[in-house]
Length: 87
Image 1 (cartoon, rainbow, N blue to C red):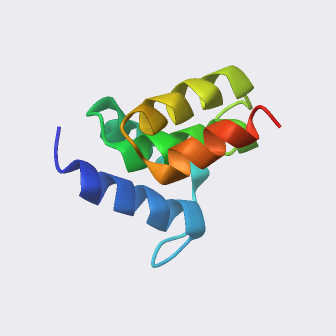
Image 2: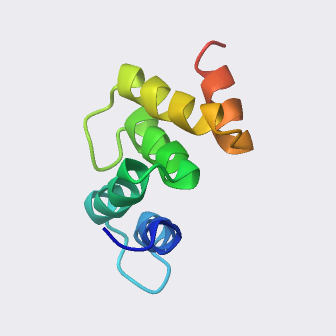
């Protein structure tokens, strides 16, 4: 398992190419580790990857699923992202 917050942060580093080469696939791996532990930030970020098709095949249904999990925990980013899916 590991520290979900750290996993999300590492995913963000790969997502944005900060300190490491940008690698959406690795970002997804780290976000998923955090998301599977119930970390709302990891869930929201993973939803964004599905929304944009970065590191995974674009899948709006999966994006909504992950945004909803984050939103249900009160994560403001997840709530906003979920709302934009219905725009």
